[in-house]
Image (cartoon, rainbow, N blue to C red; front, side):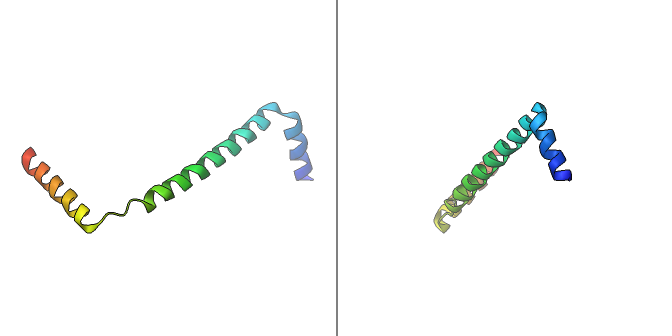
Length: 66
């Protein structure tokens, strides 16, 4: 009974239908963002040599700042 009441309300209420569409759009956008973040994370692996160069460059920058 509740389900039918909700369907009837959504059929009649413009604001709730708009809200429902906005929520669906946000879910879609968040799914896409999640896939993009995962893809970016997969490509973030650095070689040990690159990690060492970055560590040294940051240490030198810190030394220059003091």
